[in-house]
Image (tube, rainbow, N blue to C red; front, side, top):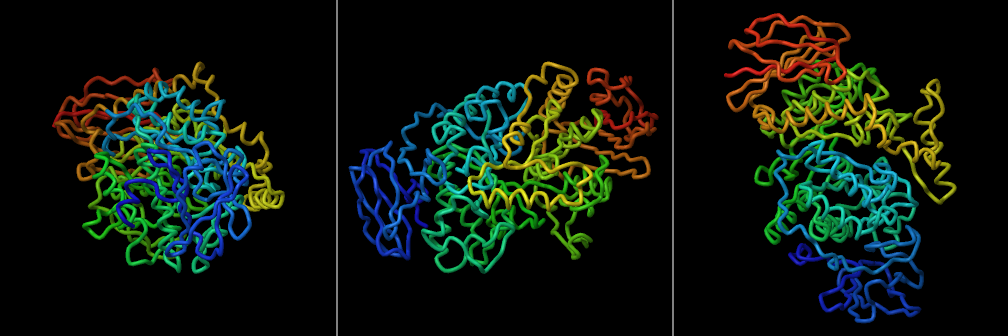
Length: 611
């Protein structure tokens, strides 16, 4: 790819400063290509490598159009706007028309990210970008520094998690379309909040997927959970790669997005000499030099391979950070989750200790579930490259009944899980609503229009949970009630115990952001001790001349403990069991090292000492 791809969007319909439209489509097997608008067809000229182009002053922003390939009409797969959905006509828009007010904004370093994951449709009653804007003060008061939006690329209907998107360049119409997303990002920056956008480059959804009508966007060389893989290394792959690379650059350049979260990159099948992710990182670096800004690339990856997050000079792919599901799995087993499915590989406290020590639980050991040795050792990768959480959209929504932690665990255990995330040397992430123990589920929902697809999704969901029939019926993904039952209940914030939980999260986040031993992501300066017989874990963090002893009790009983350390005057600075948080209230005076303390069940006590 050349630098022009970095400078500006070149694919699809674009407008220069004078208002002239340039059209560029890759349709290598077509005999004729035209665009139809204003009841006229305008033929495109064949160019090299299967491209077709046109420059015209007739097509203007705000005009509906469609692409005619060998006489048959299709929506534009490069479309920036699909006002009538995935099967409807495309709308030409000019992204540069938006007047940004964030000139003074500077994307914070990853060390300062404290992430809050949002599904736009269920976060507010409105289910729109504007609805999110109305809640930014809530997030700011909570202490959040970055929001992460689940995918917003145009999907079928108005109800979807977003991973069924089929127009990667077009922002979901029901959320507020491109202009609404630009306004949201602008508003976030005005509040001091970074914006992460979840994008899907490993598959395209089943309904409204017209990419195959344009060219070889898919290959049967590899299979993924969603069918044929996207073509990143087979014949025609250069132009397919360009499609997705331009998409990533568009979000950074034209929407001022601060970071992308790339979904399931282990399903990006690419054996090219230069992996797609490495090429993406090189172009993002180039973009940063052109704009003077900073953009982060975050991945979801199931391979425990630090090559993905190693810097380019170290022969890595250069991704800035990754989600760390193994922390979640180990934490949930500590909280009492049954060791079945993907939890079967985790041994509670020992596995949780391993995540604090190594980031990956499996960093070369034998995995019984996978039946092979698994993982690499990321000992040289800093803590800021790992994002940890006690729940997220996947781990909640992929349960049959979509239960959040608020429906699964006691009030005290929920507080302990939150603290386990916040005291880690990694980047913390919350899932929307957890800060006040939202009781509503987050279910799997869709709004397809194809009856056969609707039936297949429903049957597939039932088959997936056939062994759990004793827990009740599987909620119908297509039913609007499934979607509505997944919306947050903001009125809960005015009542106990939800208001108490919110204040607890505020205090916990404040401690995370202000204490010198917790602010740093130094993985070298952490000690861990697991007492599996007691169900307790000790995490020692140091910084700024202070040492924190974080003692976590996952058991349902009180546990007596000798306070570690050699200096007198240990002071309790945080107590999840305090009466302020509806706990059984424990107060401690400054204690000499070696003092015996009693941990309440399902609690964390944090002691501070000078060193």
